[in-house]
Amino acid sequence: GGRYLGNNTGTTSIINRPGAALTTAGAYIAVPVTLDGVLTNTGTERTYIREAALFDTSGPVVDGGFTIQGLTVPGTGSTLAATGDPLHVADITGGTLTIPATGRLSIDPAAHGYLSTTLVNRGTLTAETTNGSGWYFNDGSVDNYGTLNLGGRYLGNNTGTTSIINRP
Image (tube, rainbow, N blue to C red; front, side, top):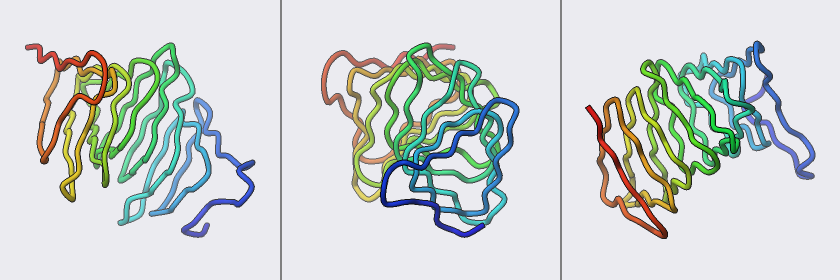
């Protein structure tokens, strides 16, 4: 289809259920997306998703270049397996998000990114910032069992209790 999917009324959404496959090619998706199943980008440009929510504890498999502005994790927690090009996410809220050993996640906001959840990393987690922006914790924490790359200009605590636990 086209490069842009959106509406003016806020009543449209995309729901990708377990076992389903959704393929994009460098699209801009401005409607809420519920992620589960397989999400693949075959384009040379990243697919941008403004708002996404994980469906349940099994979580989706994301392959190819995707950028998600806001990601909501269910209260029961979920797993997100991003392979190939790392998944870029700016804001993460909700329950515990687990990145499996084969997963690759980059928290790389264009402005300020916020972590308001517990992130358990067993794969590769890169916390970067661009354009002089910052990455803030809002009662979020990182429990790292994999590879943790901290970069950029600012990593700070905005509110509450925050921790990064780096384990062998």
